[in-house]
Length: 265
Ligand SMILES: [Zn+2]
Image (tube, rainbow, N blue to C red):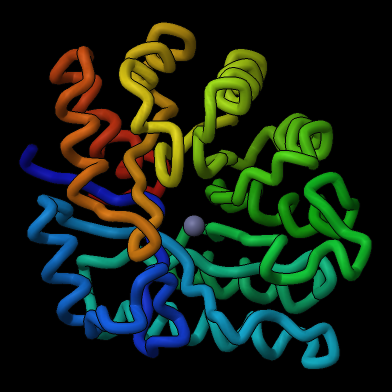
């Protein structure tokens, strides 16, 4: 494949941002991580920085801002190889709106992956259906932004509410998961034109899953993603290549859909 865009990664500069589960004795530097992604055939990555330092409400928006600053540092190091994804947080509407304005001014369209389970949305009594989030997404919609979000299985109704209430935002759910969860993703995609899915995390190892998704919802709203460095990127590339789908579908999933969504060339 001439291009492969990994829509869902979490790049890092420091080891505390490296989410590889086996990094005790396997610490790739940021440069080595990039070389490994390229070795898998990946030509560009997207996504947010996350940190094992977690989230502490008493620090306010500070931790979240630090992650966004780090994403810009990674961008400096990786250049064209990386399209940064920015964090917002519904407990901090004003600060989040500033992030959106900054992104728009600088030509960035990707919010997330947002990770409510790491960033304590629950501690603030917030979820994907909260009006605070809607306020942030309203501005994101004006700027035709893309919202990459972690699938919160217990927030089934809230995920649907979020997608339904913000038709101008393109929502990319992360992780197909097992069949029962994957079917819910496909149902949402059948119902809402602005619902997309990236194939990172679990699900793709089930033979025929990609073919089934295309049969149900077409090939324009499914994006290639891995969740590197949690996962082995080579495995995901090979899994897509091995599915019984057309060359055209593979091109769309590997890069054309991401290019269109994020306005990349
Ligand atoms: Zn992720």
